[in-house]
Length: 321
Image (cartoon, helix red, strand yellow):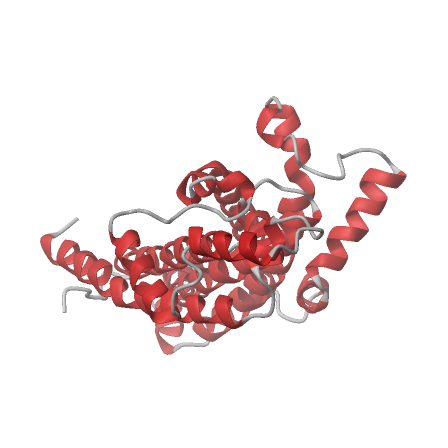
């Protein structure tokens, strides 16, 4: 890595700090104005003792004004302290996140990799054989993939592959304790549900990007120089079509991350998505904030990697300014 790119990466990382502060401020305000009370979620519904409830609020610092609570939270966050969960047996938030993060990362990386491996060749073939049976089938399949709600697809797969046929486990609670083959079985349906709309989106975008570059003057000039269609297509067209594809891949990571909250819950996948869902339903403020900030940092990091990949794909791009 050149010193210019390294300086660019350091500037982007430092620039992410105000973004994360803004994200924490917005989320802190939203979780506190949302209806519900975390103390009521953690105690028995029969316990209506006002003194006990007031003491519990003091123990978690919820009796202080919101600006004071936020300043205290940010001060702890600067020292790497994400606080303790109000529910989840009062575990440290960072410990909860560490326990769940690997499951979510595996789910995200595998589903994204499978989506790209299927969609890029499909999009290229669809563009080079425009209006053929393959192209029309890909177009119709892409629209269906984009229109289908992923939670509906998840329930459909569970019903047929688990309940009717018994081929795959319906839920993935024990995925961490399973052997390799077991992990694969637990992962098939969650990965398929997350990858399916991404395949449709990427294939549609890759087809459009390839069609755009195929009709460019430099492609015609390359053919006029005597290069074969295959060399022109893959040496000049494919590389240029990949540049916008990198951008949408970065955006799609954020979309998959958001969509995994419901999918992880449906399949009982022990990741950050299901942790966030449970924290929201129990109004566990520290866990909601911790997961949101970590997810925000992950998205910022992915976008930084996307920008650095521009240099690899297109050396004309400079990131040193």
